[in-house]
Length: 257
Image (tube, rainbow, N blue to C red; front, side):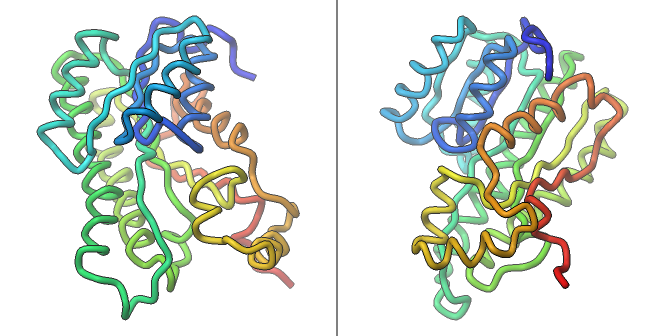
């Protein structure tokens, strides 16, 4: 277990941080002492999340911005620096997804998901990375992946393709920015209970049972388990880890007999 003051005095930014895995990660970082900024597109949901986070005693702030808007992202990063201080912990969790047959996937549908997942991650990472390099501040980045980027997915080809790009981006920037003391890693959760993704992609109990049956550990991940792994990768305990992908899927990617 990480010490309660692991991130004391440091500022964290979590995109897609107003619900699901992102909010659980924001809670964990706040519990460990970080001042936390979250980005989302729903002002009401952001306000509720900030209210939750503020109970931990650390500072928390929410920013309604679309990660696809590079200019808006840059302005938001500058505002966070002014109000909470230099960002030293970044979690790119903002995503979009839906099930669709590849032949029925529209151009707009493809672009929307790729813009959020791949371009949005790039916009935020470049803006935060530039500020860190210019100021000499430390920075650790975790990008949230998907197992579909490793296996392929016929029904979520747009998301799988975009997340595959995020994997390569992470490795590329890990090599490019290591000389600045910046670490970047990917964290890839498997099926995680209580998330919108699970509800949207595996809606019926029969489908859920089928997928859980294929997990050697016999259950979905808890959001806290993903948040704990993320906190570890961000922390100094993982100070010699960069450019890697930590898969947390209960062994689902393993071949079964």
